[in-house]
Image (spheres, chains in turn yellow, purple):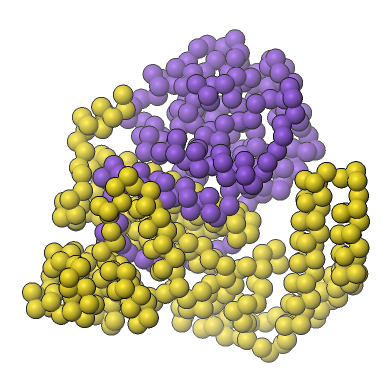
Length: 313
Length: 200
Protein backbone atom coordinates (compact mmCIF):
# COMPACT_ATOMS: atom_id res chain seq x y z
CA UNK A 1 0.00 0.00 0.00
CA UNK A 2 1.35 3.40 -0.94
CA UNK A 3 1.38 6.06 1.70
CA UNK A 4 2.16 9.64 2.49
CA UNK A 5 4.66 11.01 4.96
CA UNK A 6 7.25 9.40 7.15
CA UNK A 7 6.55 6.45 9.43
CA UNK A 8 4.11 7.09 12.29
CA UNK A 9 1.92 9.34 10.10
CA UNK A 10 4.11 12.40 10.19
CA UNK A 11 4.09 15.41 7.92
CA UNK A 12 5.08 14.46 4.40
CA UNK A 13 7.36 16.47 2.15
CA UNK A 14 5.44 18.17 -0.62
CA UNK A 15 7.35 19.85 -3.41
CA UNK A 16 5.19 22.96 -3.47
CA UNK A 17 7.37 24.84 -5.98
CA UNK A 18 7.17 22.05 -8.50
CA UNK A 19 3.42 21.72 -8.03
CA UNK A 20 2.95 25.48 -8.36
CA UNK A 21 4.90 25.55 -11.65
CA UNK A 22 2.86 22.69 -13.07
CA UNK A 23 -0.47 24.09 -11.96
CA UNK A 24 0.27 27.57 -13.32
CA UNK A 25 0.73 26.08 -16.75
CA UNK A 26 -2.52 24.12 -16.43
CA UNK A 27 -4.42 27.15 -15.08
CA UNK A 28 -3.25 29.33 -17.99
CA UNK A 29 -4.17 26.65 -20.45
CA UNK A 30 -7.68 26.21 -19.09
CA UNK A 31 -8.40 29.85 -18.18
CA UNK A 32 -10.54 30.48 -21.22
CA UNK A 33 -12.60 27.31 -20.88
CA UNK A 34 -15.18 29.07 -18.67
CA UNK A 35 -15.94 31.61 -21.43
CA UNK A 36 -15.79 29.07 -24.24
CA UNK A 37 -18.11 26.52 -22.66
CA UNK A 38 -21.44 28.43 -23.03
CA UNK A 39 -20.51 29.54 -26.55
CA UNK A 40 -19.62 25.99 -27.55
CA UNK A 41 -22.89 24.69 -26.09
CA UNK A 42 -24.93 27.21 -28.10
CA UNK A 43 -23.08 26.38 -31.31
CA UNK A 44 -23.55 22.67 -30.75
CA UNK A 45 -27.31 23.07 -30.32
CA UNK A 46 -27.53 25.25 -33.43
CA UNK A 47 -25.45 23.01 -35.69
CA UNK A 48 -27.77 21.19 -38.11
CA UNK A 49 -25.13 18.75 -39.38
CA UNK A 50 -24.53 17.02 -36.06
CA UNK A 51 -26.69 14.10 -35.04
CA UNK A 52 -28.20 13.96 -31.56
CA UNK A 53 -25.90 11.18 -30.39
CA UNK A 54 -22.81 13.04 -31.63
CA UNK A 55 -24.04 16.25 -30.02
CA UNK A 56 -24.56 14.46 -26.69
CA UNK A 57 -21.08 12.93 -26.87
CA UNK A 58 -19.46 16.31 -27.53
CA UNK A 59 -21.42 17.91 -24.69
CA UNK A 60 -20.27 15.12 -22.38
CA UNK A 61 -16.64 15.69 -23.39
CA UNK A 62 -17.05 19.42 -22.85
CA UNK A 63 -18.49 18.88 -19.39
CA UNK A 64 -15.61 16.53 -18.53
CA UNK A 65 -13.04 19.13 -19.66
CA UNK A 66 -14.76 21.85 -17.60
CA UNK A 67 -14.88 19.59 -14.53
CA UNK A 68 -11.18 18.77 -14.89
CA UNK A 69 -10.28 22.46 -15.00
CA UNK A 70 -12.50 23.23 -12.00
CA UNK A 71 -10.74 20.47 -10.09
CA UNK A 72 -7.30 21.89 -10.92
CA UNK A 73 -8.40 25.36 -9.76
CA UNK A 74 -9.85 23.95 -6.53
CA UNK A 75 -6.76 21.91 -5.82
CA UNK A 76 -4.42 24.85 -6.53
CA UNK A 77 -6.16 26.81 -3.78
CA UNK A 78 -5.87 24.02 -1.26
CA UNK A 79 -2.21 23.04 -1.37
CA UNK A 80 -0.46 25.00 1.36
CA UNK A 81 2.86 24.03 2.81
CA UNK A 82 2.73 22.83 6.39
CA UNK A 83 -0.97 21.89 6.31
CA UNK A 84 -2.18 18.40 7.09
CA UNK A 85 -3.41 16.24 4.23
CA UNK A 86 -7.21 16.39 4.42
CA UNK A 87 -9.78 13.74 3.62
CA UNK A 88 -10.83 15.47 0.40
CA UNK A 89 -7.31 16.03 -0.86
CA UNK A 90 -6.53 14.72 -4.29
CA UNK A 91 -3.93 11.97 -4.09
CA UNK A 92 -4.09 10.82 -7.68
CA UNK A 93 -3.98 13.27 -10.57
CA UNK A 94 -6.09 11.00 -12.76
CA UNK A 95 -8.73 10.09 -10.23
CA UNK A 96 -10.04 12.69 -7.78
CA UNK A 97 -12.29 10.14 -6.03
CA UNK A 98 -9.33 8.46 -4.31
CA UNK A 99 -8.74 9.72 -0.77
CA UNK A 100 -6.55 8.89 2.23
CA UNK A 101 -8.10 6.26 4.50
CA UNK A 102 -9.26 7.91 7.74
CA UNK A 103 -8.70 5.04 10.14
CA UNK A 104 -5.24 3.79 9.34
CA UNK A 105 -2.73 1.90 11.40
CA UNK A 106 -0.68 3.82 13.95
CA UNK A 107 2.63 2.33 12.89
CA UNK A 108 2.58 3.04 9.16
CA UNK A 109 2.04 5.99 6.80
CA UNK A 110 -1.54 7.04 6.02
CA UNK A 111 -2.88 4.64 3.42
CA UNK A 112 -4.76 5.81 0.39
CA UNK A 113 -6.64 4.01 -2.30
CA UNK A 114 -10.03 2.34 -2.35
CA UNK A 115 -11.62 0.82 0.72
CA UNK A 116 -13.86 -2.03 -0.35
CA UNK A 117 -16.51 -3.39 2.00
CA UNK A 118 -17.71 -6.97 1.81
CA UNK A 119 -20.51 -8.94 3.41
CA UNK A 120 -19.73 -12.64 3.60
CA UNK A 121 -21.21 -15.87 4.88
CA UNK A 122 -18.91 -17.31 7.59
CA UNK A 123 -19.48 -20.99 6.72
CA UNK A 124 -18.37 -20.95 3.10
CA UNK A 125 -17.02 -17.48 2.34
CA UNK A 126 -19.72 -16.66 -0.20
CA UNK A 127 -19.81 -12.88 -0.68
CA UNK A 128 -23.38 -11.60 -0.75
CA UNK A 129 -22.52 -7.98 -1.39
CA UNK A 130 -19.64 -5.63 -1.90
CA UNK A 131 -19.30 -1.86 -1.96
CA UNK A 132 -16.63 0.45 -3.34
CA UNK A 133 -17.61 3.97 -2.21
CA UNK A 134 -16.26 7.30 -3.38
CA UNK A 135 -13.47 8.46 -1.07
CA UNK A 136 -13.04 6.55 2.17
CA UNK A 137 -16.01 6.91 4.50
CA UNK A 138 -16.15 5.38 7.99
CA UNK A 139 -16.77 1.65 8.41
CA UNK A 140 -20.30 1.89 9.93
CA UNK A 141 -21.50 3.76 6.82
CA UNK A 142 -20.90 0.61 4.75
CA UNK A 143 -23.28 -1.60 6.70
CA UNK A 144 -26.78 -0.49 5.72
CA UNK A 145 -26.09 -0.12 1.96
CA UNK A 146 -24.55 -3.61 1.97
CA UNK A 147 -27.57 -5.04 3.78
CA UNK A 148 -29.82 -3.33 1.24
CA UNK A 149 -27.92 -5.14 -1.51
CA UNK A 150 -28.48 -8.46 0.29
CA UNK A 151 -32.19 -7.65 0.60
CA UNK A 152 -32.36 -6.99 -3.16
CA UNK A 153 -30.78 -10.41 -3.74
CA UNK A 154 -33.29 -12.05 -1.35
CA UNK A 155 -36.16 -10.35 -3.20
CA UNK A 156 -35.01 -12.08 -6.39
CA UNK A 157 -35.41 -15.56 -4.87
CA UNK A 158 -38.73 -17.25 -5.85
CA UNK A 159 -39.68 -17.66 -2.16
CA UNK A 160 -38.04 -14.65 -0.46
CA UNK A 161 -39.76 -15.17 2.93
CA UNK A 162 -37.56 -18.22 3.51
CA UNK A 163 -34.50 -16.01 3.79
CA UNK A 164 -33.79 -13.33 6.37
CA UNK A 165 -30.68 -11.78 7.83
CA UNK A 166 -30.63 -12.85 11.50
CA UNK A 167 -27.33 -11.45 12.69
CA UNK A 168 -24.37 -9.39 11.64
CA UNK A 169 -20.82 -9.73 12.90
CA UNK A 170 -17.99 -7.29 12.50
CA UNK A 171 -14.92 -5.83 14.13
CA UNK A 172 -14.66 -2.91 16.56
CA UNK A 173 -14.68 -0.53 13.60
CA UNK A 174 -18.43 -1.04 13.10
CA UNK A 175 -19.23 -0.71 16.82
CA UNK A 176 -21.59 2.23 16.64
CA UNK A 177 -24.68 2.74 18.81
CA UNK A 178 -26.77 4.31 16.03
CA UNK A 179 -25.90 1.46 13.72
CA UNK A 180 -26.85 -1.12 16.37
CA UNK A 181 -30.20 0.61 16.80
CA UNK A 182 -30.78 0.63 13.02
CA UNK A 183 -29.92 -3.08 12.82
CA UNK A 184 -32.23 -3.96 15.73
CA UNK A 185 -35.02 -2.07 13.95
CA UNK A 186 -34.47 -4.37 10.98
CA UNK A 187 -34.64 -7.43 13.24
CA UNK A 188 -30.91 -8.15 13.05
CA UNK A 189 -28.94 -9.28 16.11
CA UNK A 190 -25.73 -7.35 16.75
CA UNK A 191 -24.18 -9.73 19.26
CA UNK A 192 -21.46 -10.46 16.67
CA UNK A 193 -20.19 -6.87 16.84
CA UNK A 194 -17.86 -6.62 19.85
CA UNK A 195 -17.84 -3.71 22.26
CA UNK A 196 -14.46 -4.52 23.80
CA UNK A 197 -11.28 -6.30 22.77
CA UNK A 198 -12.47 -9.44 24.59
CA UNK A 199 -13.54 -12.30 22.28
CA UNK A 200 -17.26 -13.03 22.04
CA UNK A 201 -18.54 -15.97 24.12
CA UNK A 202 -19.37 -18.70 21.56
CA UNK A 203 -21.63 -20.62 23.96
CA UNK A 204 -23.77 -18.20 26.01
CA UNK A 205 -25.82 -19.51 28.93
CA UNK A 206 -29.65 -19.37 28.76
CA UNK A 207 -29.62 -16.27 30.97
CA UNK A 208 -27.13 -14.54 28.71
CA UNK A 209 -29.22 -15.45 25.66
CA UNK A 210 -32.26 -13.91 27.33
CA UNK A 211 -30.27 -10.78 28.16
CA UNK A 212 -29.11 -10.49 24.53
CA UNK A 213 -32.66 -10.83 23.24
CA UNK A 214 -34.03 -8.33 25.75
CA UNK A 215 -31.25 -5.82 25.11
CA UNK A 216 -31.90 -5.87 21.38
CA UNK A 217 -35.69 -5.89 21.79
CA UNK A 218 -35.94 -8.90 19.49
CA UNK A 219 -37.21 -11.51 21.97
CA UNK A 220 -40.36 -12.10 19.93
CA UNK A 221 -38.59 -12.12 16.59
CA UNK A 222 -35.42 -14.15 17.17
CA UNK A 223 -35.08 -17.53 18.86
CA UNK A 224 -32.40 -18.67 21.37
CA UNK A 225 -31.09 -21.04 18.67
CA UNK A 226 -30.53 -18.07 16.36
CA UNK A 227 -28.72 -16.22 19.18
CA UNK A 228 -26.43 -19.23 19.70
CA UNK A 229 -25.60 -19.25 15.98
CA UNK A 230 -25.06 -15.48 16.00
CA UNK A 231 -22.61 -15.84 18.92
CA UNK A 232 -20.77 -18.66 17.13
CA UNK A 233 -20.64 -16.57 13.96
CA UNK A 234 -19.35 -13.53 15.88
CA UNK A 235 -16.75 -15.68 17.65
CA UNK A 236 -15.56 -16.92 14.22
CA UNK A 237 -15.41 -13.39 12.82
CA UNK A 238 -11.65 -13.56 12.03
CA UNK A 239 -12.53 -16.07 9.28
CA UNK A 240 -13.56 -13.07 7.18
CA UNK A 241 -9.86 -12.25 6.87
CA UNK A 242 -9.37 -15.48 4.93
CA UNK A 243 -12.22 -14.49 2.60
CA UNK A 244 -10.48 -11.16 2.05
CA UNK A 245 -7.19 -12.97 1.40
CA UNK A 246 -8.88 -15.12 -1.26
CA UNK A 247 -10.36 -12.07 -2.97
CA UNK A 248 -6.97 -10.34 -2.75
CA UNK A 249 -5.35 -13.35 -4.39
CA UNK A 250 -7.65 -12.74 -7.36
CA UNK A 251 -6.19 -9.25 -7.76
CA UNK A 252 -8.52 -7.20 -5.55
CA UNK A 253 -5.54 -5.78 -3.66
CA UNK A 254 -4.69 -3.58 -6.61
CA UNK A 255 -7.31 -1.68 -8.61
CA UNK A 256 -6.24 -1.85 -12.22
CA UNK A 257 -9.29 -0.38 -13.93
CA UNK A 258 -9.52 3.36 -14.20
CA UNK A 259 -11.68 5.53 -11.97
CA UNK A 260 -14.36 4.75 -9.46
CA UNK A 261 -16.55 2.98 -12.01
CA UNK A 262 -13.59 0.85 -13.06
CA UNK A 263 -12.91 -0.07 -9.43
CA UNK A 264 -16.57 -1.05 -8.96
CA UNK A 265 -16.49 -3.26 -12.06
CA UNK A 266 -13.18 -4.88 -11.12
CA UNK A 267 -14.28 -5.63 -7.56
CA UNK A 268 -17.67 -6.86 -8.74
CA UNK A 269 -16.15 -9.23 -11.26
CA UNK A 270 -13.60 -10.44 -8.70
CA UNK A 271 -16.36 -11.07 -6.16
CA UNK A 272 -18.41 -13.01 -8.73
CA UNK A 273 -15.41 -15.09 -9.80
CA UNK A 274 -14.68 -15.81 -6.11
CA UNK A 275 -18.32 -16.79 -5.52
CA UNK A 276 -18.17 -19.20 -8.46
CA UNK A 277 -15.17 -20.93 -6.87
CA UNK A 278 -16.96 -21.02 -3.48
CA UNK A 279 -20.02 -22.67 -5.03
CA UNK A 280 -17.78 -25.32 -6.61
CA UNK A 281 -16.30 -26.03 -3.16
CA UNK A 282 -19.76 -26.25 -1.59
CA UNK A 283 -20.97 -28.64 -4.28
CA UNK A 284 -17.91 -30.82 -3.81
CA UNK A 285 -18.21 -30.55 0.00
CA UNK A 286 -14.71 -29.18 0.26
CA UNK A 287 -15.41 -27.05 3.35
CA UNK A 288 -13.80 -26.91 6.77
CA UNK A 289 -15.34 -29.02 9.54
CA UNK A 290 -16.52 -25.86 11.27
CA UNK A 291 -18.07 -24.67 8.01
CA UNK A 292 -19.84 -28.00 7.46
CA UNK A 293 -21.21 -27.96 10.99
CA UNK A 294 -22.42 -24.40 10.61
CA UNK A 295 -24.16 -25.32 7.35
CA UNK A 296 -25.86 -28.29 9.03
CA UNK A 297 -27.12 -26.02 11.83
CA UNK A 298 -28.46 -23.60 9.22
CA UNK A 299 -30.23 -26.47 7.48
CA UNK A 300 -28.40 -25.94 4.19
CA UNK A 301 -28.43 -28.60 1.53
CA UNK A 302 -25.44 -30.89 1.04
CA UNK A 303 -24.95 -32.31 -2.42
CA UNK A 304 -23.37 -35.69 -2.87
CA UNK A 305 -21.05 -36.44 -5.76
CA UNK A 306 -23.71 -38.34 -7.75
CA UNK A 307 -26.08 -35.39 -7.51
CA UNK A 308 -23.36 -33.08 -8.80
CA UNK A 309 -22.67 -35.28 -11.79
CA UNK A 310 -26.37 -35.73 -12.55
CA UNK A 311 -26.97 -31.99 -12.52
CA UNK A 312 -24.69 -31.47 -15.51
CA UNK A 313 -26.74 -33.60 -17.88
CA UNK B 1 -27.76 -21.86 -30.64
CA UNK B 2 -27.97 -18.06 -30.43
CA UNK B 3 -24.31 -17.86 -29.43
CA UNK B 4 -23.36 -19.97 -32.44
CA UNK B 5 -25.33 -17.56 -34.63
CA UNK B 6 -23.39 -14.63 -33.14
CA UNK B 7 -20.09 -16.35 -33.86
CA UNK B 8 -20.99 -17.75 -37.25
CA UNK B 9 -18.40 -15.67 -39.07
CA UNK B 10 -15.63 -17.14 -36.90
CA UNK B 11 -16.81 -20.68 -36.48
CA UNK B 12 -17.83 -21.56 -40.00
CA UNK B 13 -14.34 -22.49 -41.15
CA UNK B 14 -13.11 -25.71 -42.72
CA UNK B 15 -11.29 -26.96 -39.63
CA UNK B 16 -12.09 -30.10 -37.59
CA UNK B 17 -15.50 -30.25 -35.93
CA UNK B 18 -15.34 -30.15 -32.12
CA UNK B 19 -18.06 -30.56 -29.49
CA UNK B 20 -16.81 -28.72 -26.41
CA UNK B 21 -19.30 -30.46 -24.08
CA UNK B 22 -17.83 -33.82 -25.03
CA UNK B 23 -14.24 -32.65 -25.14
CA UNK B 24 -13.93 -30.81 -21.79
CA UNK B 25 -13.91 -33.26 -18.83
CA UNK B 26 -16.80 -32.90 -16.39
CA UNK B 27 -14.33 -32.49 -13.56
CA UNK B 28 -12.36 -29.72 -15.25
CA UNK B 29 -12.06 -26.74 -12.84
CA UNK B 30 -13.12 -24.16 -15.43
CA UNK B 31 -16.16 -26.25 -16.41
CA UNK B 32 -17.20 -26.74 -12.78
CA UNK B 33 -16.72 -23.03 -12.13
CA UNK B 34 -18.63 -21.94 -15.24
CA UNK B 35 -21.57 -24.22 -14.41
CA UNK B 36 -22.23 -22.34 -11.17
CA UNK B 37 -23.29 -19.11 -12.92
CA UNK B 38 -26.92 -18.32 -13.82
CA UNK B 39 -25.91 -17.17 -17.31
CA UNK B 40 -29.40 -16.77 -18.72
CA UNK B 41 -30.55 -14.43 -15.94
CA UNK B 42 -27.32 -12.46 -16.11
CA UNK B 43 -27.59 -11.94 -19.87
CA UNK B 44 -31.23 -10.92 -19.40
CA UNK B 45 -30.02 -8.20 -17.01
CA UNK B 46 -27.16 -7.02 -19.23
CA UNK B 47 -28.98 -6.81 -22.56
CA UNK B 48 -31.78 -4.34 -21.65
CA UNK B 49 -29.39 -2.24 -19.56
CA UNK B 50 -27.05 -1.80 -22.54
CA UNK B 51 -29.90 -1.29 -24.98
CA UNK B 52 -31.37 1.44 -22.78
CA UNK B 53 -28.13 3.26 -22.06
CA UNK B 54 -26.42 2.77 -25.42
CA UNK B 55 -29.10 2.77 -28.09
CA UNK B 56 -27.12 2.16 -31.26
CA UNK B 57 -28.37 1.48 -34.73
CA UNK B 58 -26.21 -1.13 -36.39
CA UNK B 59 -25.36 -0.54 -40.03
CA UNK B 60 -27.05 -2.89 -42.47
CA UNK B 61 -24.84 -5.69 -43.70
CA UNK B 62 -22.45 -5.41 -40.78
CA UNK B 63 -21.38 -8.26 -38.59
CA UNK B 64 -23.57 -9.54 -35.80
CA UNK B 65 -22.12 -8.30 -32.49
CA UNK B 66 -20.40 -10.71 -30.10
CA UNK B 67 -22.92 -12.22 -27.66
CA UNK B 68 -23.05 -10.56 -24.21
CA UNK B 69 -22.94 -14.07 -22.69
CA UNK B 70 -19.48 -14.59 -24.16
CA UNK B 71 -18.14 -11.16 -23.16
CA UNK B 72 -19.51 -11.54 -19.64
CA UNK B 73 -17.88 -14.96 -19.32
CA UNK B 74 -14.57 -13.62 -20.67
CA UNK B 75 -14.59 -10.75 -18.18
CA UNK B 76 -15.27 -13.15 -15.29
CA UNK B 77 -12.67 -15.62 -16.51
CA UNK B 78 -10.16 -12.79 -16.72
CA UNK B 79 -10.45 -12.38 -12.94
CA UNK B 80 -10.67 -16.07 -12.19
CA UNK B 81 -7.56 -16.95 -14.18
CA UNK B 82 -5.64 -13.71 -13.57
CA UNK B 83 -5.26 -13.02 -17.27
CA UNK B 84 -5.03 -9.78 -19.21
CA UNK B 85 -7.68 -8.86 -21.79
CA UNK B 86 -5.38 -9.96 -24.61
CA UNK B 87 -4.41 -13.13 -22.77
CA UNK B 88 -7.97 -14.28 -22.16
CA UNK B 89 -8.99 -13.50 -25.75
CA UNK B 90 -6.09 -15.63 -26.97
CA UNK B 91 -7.06 -18.45 -24.61
CA UNK B 92 -10.57 -18.34 -26.02
CA UNK B 93 -9.05 -19.15 -29.39
CA UNK B 94 -6.98 -22.10 -28.16
CA UNK B 95 -8.40 -23.35 -24.83
CA UNK B 96 -11.48 -25.54 -25.24
CA UNK B 97 -12.39 -25.23 -21.55
CA UNK B 98 -12.51 -21.44 -21.95
CA UNK B 99 -14.71 -21.93 -25.05
CA UNK B 100 -17.03 -24.10 -22.93
CA UNK B 101 -17.15 -21.45 -20.19
CA UNK B 102 -18.04 -18.84 -22.81
CA UNK B 103 -20.98 -20.92 -23.97
CA UNK B 104 -19.53 -22.20 -27.24
CA UNK B 105 -20.73 -25.75 -27.76
CA UNK B 106 -19.52 -26.40 -31.34
CA UNK B 107 -16.28 -25.23 -32.96
CA UNK B 108 -15.17 -25.51 -36.54
CA UNK B 109 -12.52 -22.82 -36.86
CA UNK B 110 -9.57 -22.39 -39.17
CA UNK B 111 -5.95 -22.09 -38.10
CA UNK B 112 -5.60 -18.72 -39.80
CA UNK B 113 -8.10 -17.05 -37.46
CA UNK B 114 -6.15 -15.06 -34.86
CA UNK B 115 -8.99 -14.22 -32.47
CA UNK B 116 -12.59 -15.15 -31.83
CA UNK B 117 -13.10 -11.97 -29.81
CA UNK B 118 -10.85 -8.94 -30.05
CA UNK B 119 -9.45 -7.50 -26.78
CA UNK B 120 -10.82 -4.06 -27.65
CA UNK B 121 -14.34 -5.52 -27.87
CA UNK B 122 -13.93 -6.82 -24.32
CA UNK B 123 -12.67 -3.41 -23.17
CA UNK B 124 -15.69 -1.67 -24.73
CA UNK B 125 -18.04 -4.16 -23.07
CA UNK B 126 -16.44 -3.59 -19.68
CA UNK B 127 -16.73 0.18 -20.02
CA UNK B 128 -20.46 -0.13 -20.47
CA UNK B 129 -21.01 -1.89 -17.15
CA UNK B 130 -22.17 0.63 -14.56
CA UNK B 131 -22.32 0.19 -10.75
CA UNK B 132 -26.08 -0.51 -10.78
CA UNK B 133 -25.69 -3.28 -13.33
CA UNK B 134 -22.76 -4.71 -11.36
CA UNK B 135 -24.89 -4.82 -8.19
CA UNK B 136 -27.66 -6.51 -10.16
CA UNK B 137 -25.29 -9.18 -11.46
CA UNK B 138 -23.99 -9.96 -7.96
CA UNK B 139 -27.58 -10.05 -6.67
CA UNK B 140 -28.58 -12.48 -9.44
CA UNK B 141 -25.70 -14.79 -8.56
CA UNK B 142 -26.54 -14.64 -4.84
CA UNK B 143 -30.24 -15.24 -5.50
CA UNK B 144 -29.46 -18.27 -7.68
CA UNK B 145 -27.21 -19.75 -4.98
CA UNK B 146 -29.87 -19.14 -2.31
CA UNK B 147 -32.62 -20.64 -4.46
CA UNK B 148 -30.49 -23.73 -4.94
CA UNK B 149 -30.09 -23.99 -1.15
CA UNK B 150 -26.31 -23.67 -1.25
CA UNK B 151 -25.94 -20.52 0.84
CA UNK B 152 -27.96 -18.62 3.42
CA UNK B 153 -27.77 -14.93 4.38
CA UNK B 154 -28.92 -15.66 7.96
CA UNK B 155 -25.61 -14.87 9.65
CA UNK B 156 -23.24 -12.50 7.93
CA UNK B 157 -19.88 -10.91 8.57
CA UNK B 158 -18.78 -7.49 7.42
CA UNK B 159 -15.30 -6.14 6.92
CA UNK B 160 -13.40 -3.68 4.78
CA UNK B 161 -10.03 -3.91 3.10
CA UNK B 162 -7.84 -1.37 1.31
CA UNK B 163 -6.95 -1.69 -2.35
CA UNK B 164 -4.12 0.22 -3.86
CA UNK B 165 -4.76 2.13 -7.08
CA UNK B 166 -2.44 0.24 -9.38
CA UNK B 167 -1.81 0.57 -13.06
CA UNK B 168 -2.46 -1.83 -15.87
CA UNK B 169 0.56 -2.96 -17.79
CA UNK B 170 -1.49 -2.63 -20.94
CA UNK B 171 -4.26 -0.14 -20.15
CA UNK B 172 -7.70 -0.06 -21.74
CA UNK B 173 -6.72 3.18 -23.44
CA UNK B 174 -3.63 1.52 -24.94
CA UNK B 175 -5.67 -1.42 -26.22
CA UNK B 176 -8.19 0.88 -27.89
CA UNK B 177 -5.42 3.14 -29.26
CA UNK B 178 -3.59 0.16 -30.72
CA UNK B 179 -6.81 -1.05 -32.30
CA UNK B 180 -7.36 2.33 -33.97
CA UNK B 181 -3.79 2.62 -35.21
CA UNK B 182 -3.34 -0.91 -36.53
CA UNK B 183 -6.70 -2.49 -37.17
CA UNK B 184 -5.16 -4.98 -39.59
CA UNK B 185 -3.10 -6.76 -36.91
CA UNK B 186 -6.02 -8.38 -35.17
CA UNK B 187 -8.57 -8.67 -37.94
CA UNK B 188 -6.60 -9.28 -41.13
CA UNK B 189 -5.85 -12.90 -40.28
CA UNK B 190 -9.47 -13.70 -39.54
CA UNK B 191 -10.64 -11.73 -42.56
CA UNK B 192 -8.50 -13.82 -44.89
CA UNK B 193 -10.59 -16.92 -44.38
CA UNK B 194 -13.88 -15.42 -43.28
CA UNK B 195 -16.63 -14.67 -45.76
CA UNK B 196 -17.78 -11.49 -44.02
CA UNK B 197 -15.91 -8.15 -44.21
CA UNK B 198 -13.48 -7.26 -41.39
CA UNK B 199 -14.67 -5.58 -38.21
CA UNK B 200 -14.36 -1.75 -38.51
